[in-house]
Image 1 (tube, rainbow over the protein chains, first blue to last red):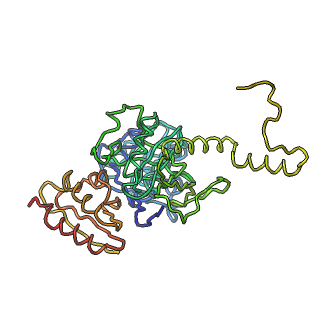
Image 2 (cartoon, chains in turn green, brown):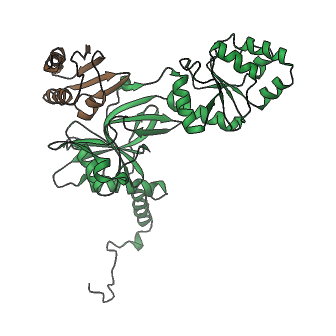
Length: 336
Length: 88
């Protein structure tokens, strides 16, 4: 499988409108300033607690991040007379800050709203506590600003294992995916799969907003898996766990026979096991795919068939006097 | 490798039929063919991919060709774009 660096993309900024649309839906963030400043942009996935900046120390004020007003900031501001507060807000708004989020459901000071409207800086509020909402916003921004890679592949959830089928055009990726769907597995995306790095060491896969569960089958054309097989046959996102590379059998290539050694491929700095599967007449790729998933599950829960067999052989070799080639030597009249 | 920016010039944009034709032309060649739009790159031999670009009239997309017959392939594809998908 070839990973092309130029297919990796990353968002450089998002608008406040985009931020508000998603955070209001997912975490119930509300806007106290209507749609004022919705065309401003957020350029980095970090937050800032401006406690020191409010107190007057602005030397290292990370003003270009989302500003969080938590209990500390609010209690400090509450302890001041209104005139002093106004001066502080004016000082803060001298900087080009993207927006302010006030936590714990605290209503913003009227003078803050007034000045924000004048300066065109949005003020948002959340009923969640500072730690919780900070975590959620950072998690959201991390995903938005994450490296994304689009690959030409089919992505299916097989027994809960996210399996990505790659290979040349026309080798039968979509047909394998369709066969798996028919057997009760769930399609995530076909043809265009977008992989996003989530945290460290995790890749999440999804389809495009337009063509998520559409599929092209040579000779038939375009089908919609969701309307054809129902909602049980699809899902919208899945962690990528195994890559299966389909290729025409090449007699010069050595294919894995024991499975003791795992080959990994690095995608956006995440190692994912890759299995090369030669296509041969009479080979049922769907069943093999299911077996790959089951084997992955077994390994995940601590049972590695190749290792167990290899250990058994080792044991026998250490005690050759117990060695018997046949599994059963006395058949106990069980002539089945 | 050949890289070229092309503009969609027909009124209806890159809709289903031109998408199918592009994929059909591309499949006659061995080289890899990618289309890039809005920072996303898709395989030009995948019909769903080409369609979901939803490239409207006036949008500029980047085509890349890589392989042994890349010159012939790029000529055929770029010609089809320049003809406005025969819909002008």
